[in-house]
Length: 297
Image 1 (cartoon, helix red, strand yellow):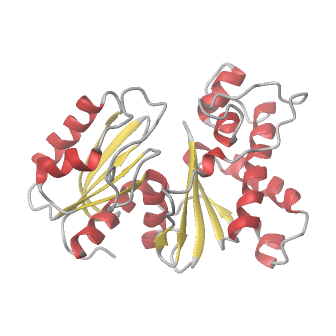
Image 2: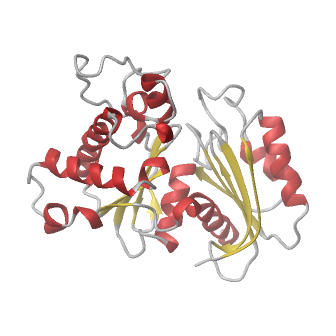
């Protein structure tokens, strides 16, 4: 999709940054990954990496939020109120642009992943689909007609209110803003605090997974009713575990209770809720696609 122009991409996550140079996910010519620490240290390492590359024509930046992706806004490129210490008010676009003076494309990390999947992954040829990531936090991007959905700012799919039966799950939730929203109940941080160990260490037969899949299924049901996506791509740690993905498919099917009159949902849930086609490359691929879009403006 991107052609032969050499592009730079930054995927800024709450846990780690990924910086890459190439023309697409099948042509990554240089790459570096490092932990997300302070803005000064983290962005400094990104700038140092790209300073050592030659021939880059544009940069795409996708980042954790909430942020301001509206080019007409005075706060365009800025991370807004985030629980990530030290990052609120940091304007990533301004910092990167002042370092390189190149065209810059900018969006949320999950919107970037959705765009990457549209160009090269499991969203190719779809008119409407959702990319949802469940990891340290929870976020989602919606792709409509090849463009990611914006509005006032961008969708905050991780902060959807969910049914919370406190007799079954007395855990109060960890969201700094809403306590027991989707992210507050089902993110990686929430799972670790509820069960006392990282989700990756929980055995498959642990009751954590039944509860986790149920929360995800409730969220999926709301997204399906509201947006009628042709597919949901589930990324993050959950999307990369086939056993948990299957459990989510089963519970979402049960929650829908045959209300959606589509054979894709009723009979082929295994092809409706799927893992990313690009694996863990969706976000950085989307950053490269944003760089290409910026080059064309």
